[in-house]
Length: 210
Image (cartoon, rainbow, N blue to C red; front, side):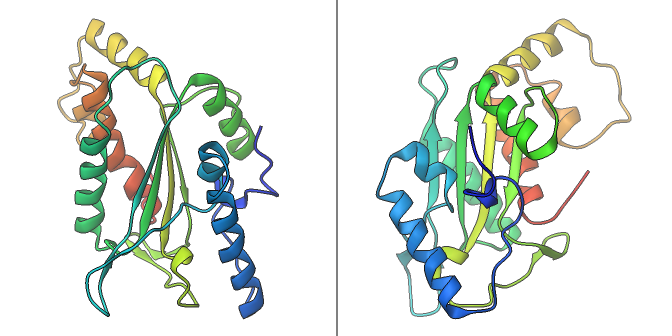
């Protein structure tokens, strides 16, 4: 299980010391974790391998980890493309994002450790930075690449598959409800619903709440 004291960004937004030395240590620890296993890397700061466009513009990576077995042949590139489009609309192309597709057991553990809810859920979002207001994040204090990260999104794929089946069997009649939740209730393909959940998750990473 995840110990929030070791991997703090999976439990809460990162709080950084004002010293350059501390920032350097965080950066180096992230690089070390990513040299180890993908599972451990996923729980560290979301990794960045930046594509240089010019001296002032970069596009950061989207890290993808498929750790579930319930839904086969998921189109990784399509999910990354959706994240990229949302990130561009939000104005954070130069910030990396980590997406992990997981099973019930691990999501339930994370939900308990971070929200004190002993049950699985469809999606968890862990922002890297505090928001000044919804959609506007505090700028990193130092020009260290690893700090330009929106955070982590974790989706429980079996949970989503069950939701799709339940929604298909239940006639949805709330015409007044709007937004992603209402749209998802009418989408019964689990993989398509993952894309819709990404909208929800990305908005949480930049400070929007329910």
